[in-house]
Each structure stands twice: as C-alpha cells, then as structure tokens.
Amino acid sequence: YCGSLEPMPLPAGTGGVAHALFVSKDRRIPKIRIQTRQLGNLLDKRIIVSVDSWDCLSRYPTGHY
Image (tube, rainbow, N blue to C red; front, side, top):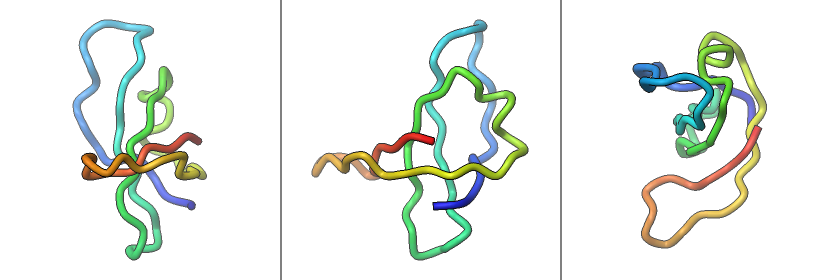
C-alpha cells in the first residue's frame, strides 16, 4: 500500500529501532505498525508498506516497507 507515516515525536536516543504508524492513501486500509531505524528520513516521504501479520489482540496489523 502507498502512503506515509503518521507524524509523531522522534524517540530519545539515536540509532535505535522506532515504531511508527503508516497511513495509506486508501482510507479503506487500516493504519499499519512498522519498525524502522530511519524514522527521521521517512516522515516526509511516500513509502510502500506490506502487511505481514495481524495479531487478534492488536489494534493494528504489523508490516514492513
């Protein structure tokens, strides 16, 4: 799915893995949780994300870009 990351404060520290929510351009697609070490570089860009899994107890599916 094509979209961008939801604006959020950058985590303290550098080089660590950050979690972010991806928002698709297609409003029918739910927000997707991803992990990245490049959060600052991806915030103002369009990216492609795929869903990997969706735990039955999780509000959002997990994916990768």
